[in-house]
Image 1 (spheres, rainbow, N blue to C red):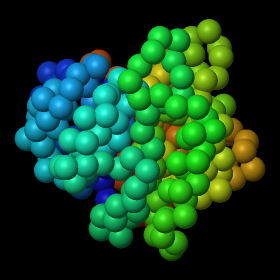
Image 2 (image 1 turned 120 degrees about the vertical axis):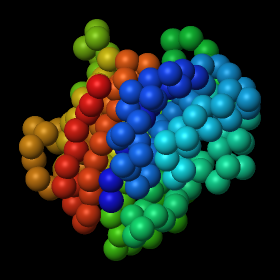
Image 3 (image 1 turned 30 degrees about the vertical axis):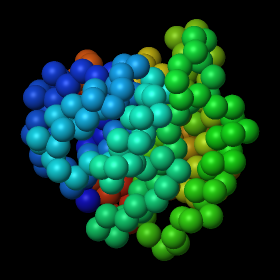
Image 4 (image 1 turned 90 degrees about the vertical axis):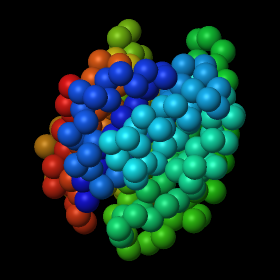
Length: 229
């Protein structure tokens, strides 16, 4: 399976044309939040329609800049991964939207305890025996993906624990614009080099506004993974 991952679109669909080939070649496109820039239903619908022009198979979670009606639109379109599970071609996709509290108030925030409760519910419905891919707007704690320019890690400890427990092949994330990276988390909680073979790849491709995106090829393992743009 080939996956194209986008994050932090913030309502700007103009970069999609430049990555059209990667979108069209994917079996599924995963959007990890901030579909809109504090927009409402109409903006979210416009963004999803623009992505679907290149690939009809889309999954998404809302970000902290997305109002509840954005999540409602994603649900109505049958593509919302927030706190739910979907199966595509033998691969399990699961997601968690929103973010931890931000310096400025945004529409879709929660505490890490609240995120933990949602992740526990998600964990109870995960099927076993299939490859797992996670889409999360907020990065897990203690990786390059959640590292601010100031050197402070601001990711979710509960998401980190979820990853360590369930060992997805990949966790696609976003939110931290400067956290553009591929990092690796192993079940012991240790962050190791990106060339480690047996571990979860944590991927923050960076905002789509700069043409950034990720492309992965998976089977029962990660065959190929790169950030482009």
